[in-house]
Image (cartoon, rainbow, N blue to C red; front, top):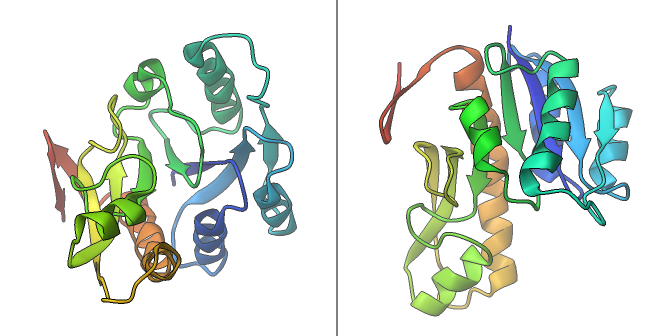
Amino acid sequence: MLNLGILISGRGSNMENILKSIKSKKIPINPAVVISNRTDARGLKIAGNLGINTEVIESKGFEGSRADYDKKIISILKKYGVTPENGLVCLAGFMRIISPQFVKEYKNRIINIHPALLPSFTGLNAQKQALEYGAKYSGCTVHFVDAEMDTGPVIIQAVVKIKENDTEESLSKRILKEEHRIYPEAVNLIARNKVRVFGRKTIIT
């Protein structure tokens, strides 16, 4: 069974949804640790209430490089058995760009969710980008993390139709509902060893 590490910066609604799916025996994975880069992240209390180990590595005021910071993350992950060989790392509202060294060591073992249909509207404010562009559809994408931003192999996507009167808030709310559905599904597929990566493509077996 894989060991799961989740990285958060705030409330972590996707984190909470994944952990509750695990607790209800829907996903065969061991929720080993939740790590935050902020001491005030609300998700720490949520994870603690669910009986999950939590750790904080404060990024504010950290004087080293991004790689130096990530070495601390990696040491905590390995402490809880979340290794490149037997672990999975989920980014759930983790507001840091992880280093190429971290990505290389945990190749195809780090996943993230983005509120757009990648490769469209990468980076921040994806919902706003979609509205300003006049897109008819948006959605969300669970993908493997690589060395660039929001460019890793796609695992699962969900489509959300954009309404004429949508605001950034209303669109974000509908997309988040789909995030809560497909992120646990992606974790489940990986936990059951059903995802294969071939270059830029993934195949679900």
